[in-house]
Image 1 (tube, helix red, strand yellow):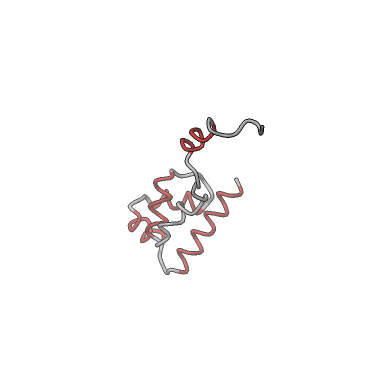
Image 2 (cartoon, rainbow, N blue to C red):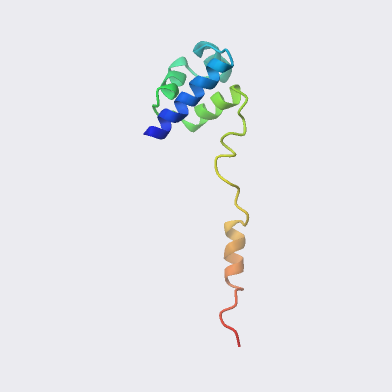
Length: 89
């Protein structure tokens, strides 16, 4: 997937800009070097490993900001659905 490759390239660029070697970042993130290599090469890794790596790079909110927060919860929407006007008299 092109998106995985893009994410991996961005992680590699940020790691290099921060002056971190792969081994250093892997240790800081508590993941194996092979996991970091997989990410940087566009191969899939677990969400937990991605979160650890981003957190180690001081991008803790990156995953949380990936999608916008829901303004109304699905439960509230269901409650409101029964109270919507069906017609105007």
